[in-house]
Amino acid sequence: MMTKIICFLNYNKFMKKFIFQTIILFFLYCNGIYGQICRVEEPISFRKTDIPDLKMSSKTVKSMPSLDMKRIIQEDNEEESKGLPPRFGYKLKVDYNLDNSGEWTVLSNGDRVWRLIISCPGALSINLCWVKNQPQTDKIT
Image 1 (tube, rainbow, N blue to C red):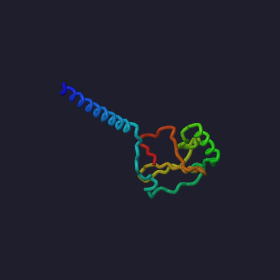
Image 2 (cartoon, rainbow, N blue to C red):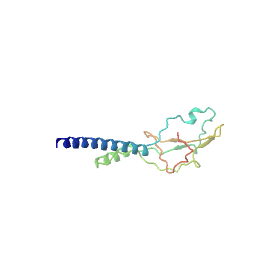
Image 3 (cartoon, rainbow, N blue to C red):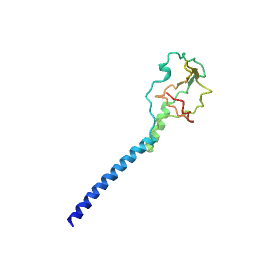
Image 4 (cartoon, helix red, strand yellow):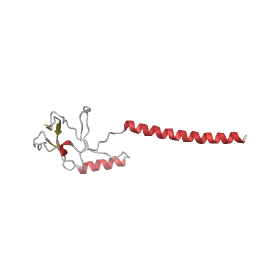
């Protein structure tokens, strides 16, 4: 009878360890599936010397309206008092694409670089959200 109890206790210890390892492996696997591809590389326009300076025009330079930071901070404080999570950024909808804004430059090796300057007075940072996916052969740097 004593032998059976010891075997039963070892079996529970084995199963706990097995289940724990399986859960850890499952989460590690899932993290890889939904992970973001991160490339640490310098933009082509920083490396190449044959890229001419960007021509300043209404097509290559886009200025956003100045932000009313007092109003934005007040809105954020009201939302925080309601228990809502903090806002990441203030959305400004625009319709800039590869055809109606920016400038294309063809490099000596045939590669093409598209450049656009975006200015937003008073903003702490500028983040871009792409509506449509780009072709797999293109890179954003």
